[in-house]
Length: 253
Image 1 (cartoon, rainbow, N blue to C red):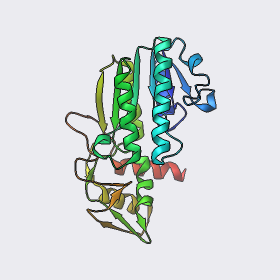
Image 2: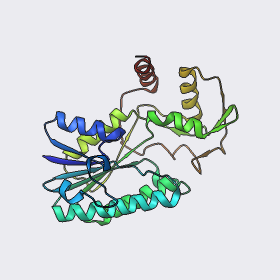
Image 3: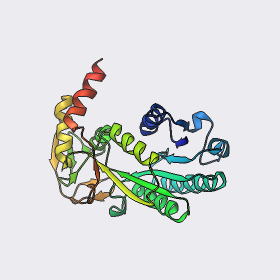
């Protein structure tokens, strides 16, 4: 089966393409570097010719509020129109757990807009919402840094390894469309401030983490439901400490 992965050269996309090829499918990594641009539509019709499934894991080059909204809206409209013309039978998109609960976050608003376009398209679809990736915890730490302190909310977060997001996407892409939303999360919920403390301890960073219920998370104030999944999510099995140990060892090699 031919499956086109939009954003197929990125963190999740490259893992997904590898997984699908190992299952014996014709997986095409669509990205500007491979001649496919979902914004300009360059190469889009050719890439989708004969495709049964399209998986959209593309990310915006700019996260400024208006720019990210325009990216996801334009890219999704172009993709969905090209899929309708090509007879694609299943549109799969990766989104974020809690998107609709944090309207002050411009990136989350853009993902909700993307989801709404997919739902209204008439193309059979599956949306997989994932919690934050382990790989981005360092970025969360840097965004929270003020001098030698990191001010972070103690609200719960349930992060996940990107390998397990790609594994879940693989299963969703190969299954029938659910015409709805699924969730995937890590095995353990923990306070956000504690998550970052674990990262700093593992990396020998001596900066102090301060728990602050008013601390913003990319523009939003959190509660325990903001970044955690609802009922019956698919759960990964890789714990953050195990991922950290493996990543540290890999970096050392």
